[in-house]
Length: 544
Image (tube, rainbow, N blue to C red; front, side, top):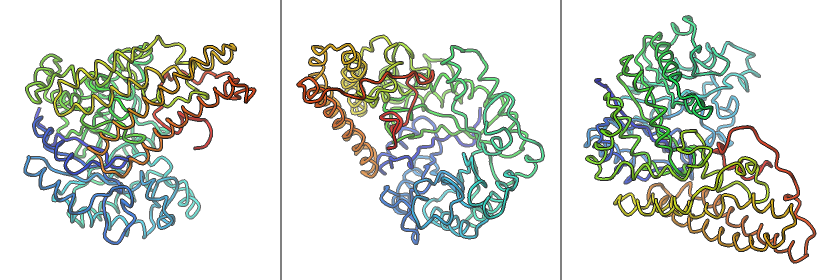
């Protein structure tokens, strides 16, 4: 199938801003695979001359940096495209008092306010001066509460489709002023019409709304196989997800606008990627994209909750999805082509998934971040302990050895494998530490608690070894900005483990009579396994 654009999107606004030289390295890889576009999702992570808080202390790209990447991409047959936000997803920016007056609610800009459009004009002016492309992704996604905050207070309730469309018209006028052709995420047209739902076999948009969408904007239907990932967890591996894709493409074609499809590489759910799951749940999406003749494709790589995973860990999925778009779904052919392209064994690279393998999710086909959950699940407060108790022992020592061995075979990517090997080494000791601590404490087994104090010490040391290696990976791939978050998290985990050990020793020595947290029974918390990619929700139920 012929494609106008076949591109990748990398997120640079979720804590990790990729270094210019590493963006170039990614461009090299994308060029080898036949990609012709790279979107930088920069939200507010770029410099604006008279808006000093854009990218402030977050590693925002300068005009010179963008132009350097743009030149390199152009020389390699790839168009570099900005993906910005003109409505929502500006949470870090709107923390600043300078922008409070422009906030409707949460991270959403105030529609109809002239100051909002003055700021958006500056956004377009800045990116126009940095990028040669005429394409721009204007965002507009997940603005769930648009019109329900300050706008509601000032103007009363207004039909939110009308509000969204009026804002879109104004943004497109500014885009046209700077000679940009815009595409946007399509979800809000569907969400406002379907009680917040975007995907499904019954999700639809009225013809009245369809007819009012401006002709000069392209719609980007993003679907990362969420429904399939959920259904796999429930044991359903039918073709239901292909039916959803089929329906959603048909609904988008009703708009009679230029259409893009954004697939998802699943490497944004903790430290380890989920390449196998991503390839599995996206296959029906690509089959339906071909059926519906969609010519513009984006393969997105996000960085949810801190940018834990290397984008290069997604290479197998980036390659596989390029082949899917060509109509090649043969796994052996894909493996052979990957080796011919990169000189690295496909299956070796797929081993990066294994930190998330466990008996509840044996091939990581369910969208859980097992390794991240097990790392941060608190030793005394472990709200995931009930689920962890049900799992068979996870062979993390074997995982660590397998990753280290594979790392010796993958050349320049060895540092990624070594990082995840050390994660598994830490989890060998950490994964069930809290469960065993509570069991020994509540049964009064002080001998077991005494033995565990040594395990606490070794766990802390292994966590710190992982932190040091992860630091090397981070500073190789990302600017230093954002590392402070990972340092606080992993450094805090290290200190917390040592503090729990100290309290156990105080209890064993009779200096304290009880450890309150270990006397509480852990209540079952839903049926979502280890799926909770939110650090602040893993370590405590209290405010962070």
